[in-house]
Length: 80
Length: 539
Image (tube, each protein chain N blue to C red):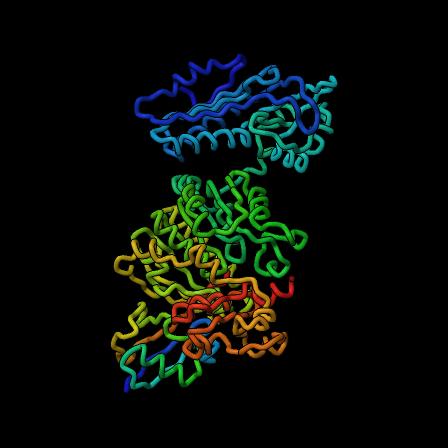
């Protein structure tokens, strides 16, 4: 198991009901982590509509997830 | 050769032309202003021009120098007549020579427009009925009448003629008072823009102020983000500001769009913004474009500007701005807001662009806009202010961490986060080719059909994409399926690829996004009801 710090933005924050949390996970990639959290919090956005950043950098969904990583899920926003 | 001169005699155009000749120049553009036979409904017989020569020549020379620096033309000159002129006589002439015609035309236009606005020249009209009067040009009239209503009368002129009028480029300027009491368009020197508070910064200085003055910035969207961008850039003395917005002001805009007033409701925002910005800083050349910045139009508009600022409220426009900036190699500053959060990105040629961050172009309707999700006024205010700051950094040549990154700002927690982004391999080419929002595709994606009729005809299966709480407030009449957008996009295969679908939502944004996505998932006959239920109500 690894422990990661997760942050949610915009509509995801609303759906998750929180802006951040620490998560113990068996997920090896951001993709697997998102699917796990999606089921847990009832997140409705599909992965294709989001981007993920790991440790301050936009990352590939299939990149390996290290213990202690800071993961940010970001939907695009359009308001102006 | 001086850049600006007055002449008491008719001009020798051949000689003027000869002064601009240069074997390195491939183009020559000129403008002639003539004395016209009517003004404001009154027939005019002849004209008299007077100038405060010392000041006027200085200002005229400054304008011509600005045009040469700004447009990179080789030679330019303007000559204005003074004294008595008959109908049809040449009153003002501008000539420009340059390596290419584009700069020559642009510089010529710039010089005549600026001369009309800035050079202190007075015009006395002699009317056919024997009367005469000194007349004001539009901008000067407003200043004169506001600032010194007594001056016109005490100088012995008929105040009845001291009103604004529309004139073509020929009938240059006029002021209602005497030359010595009316130095220029900043009466009594009190209303001259003063940039001293920013010039004193070591990063600005006189050189930096000159860079700001040379800047030409096109702002797409005059709403919650656009208002602070435009206001700060006009205040800073940016040389030229373009405002693109096709919408009219609605009272629901005012909590976040502080440039406007309730009484402005119903008027085009681009025109309102231009009017307010000119009042804020008459030195800025403000152009209003009352239109939508789409893929066909924006490249032409953007060509005359150095920096693009996306202040739109939808993904379609945001990607158009991105693509045009990448294609033309111009920097751009993008921002968007959602409730208490904002995203900011600065594009520089060769760096990461919006499509590098969002390779699967985001679609309108998938996440909320201000109307659907709500927003507090200061949120776009903060993000728009950041955009204005980034534009000034670009003009001043300062570095910025918003480049090759997305800055996330959460104004609920007051936290911000910088996420580094990398330019995608082959991005520049891909960005130009990627656009999918072509006109033809749009035409077949959205249709104007009443869902009741569509269902009754048996031709379409009607699908209501709205959330349950919206359906409760306003149920959709007639037979239909109810599948909220998220659930539909999660599993498009729940629809039958062999049937025709009419997708319906509140305003037509979500249904359009859904139709696009469903087509991509193999549901070929997915259509969006244009404008949604609000369009139906309007019928």
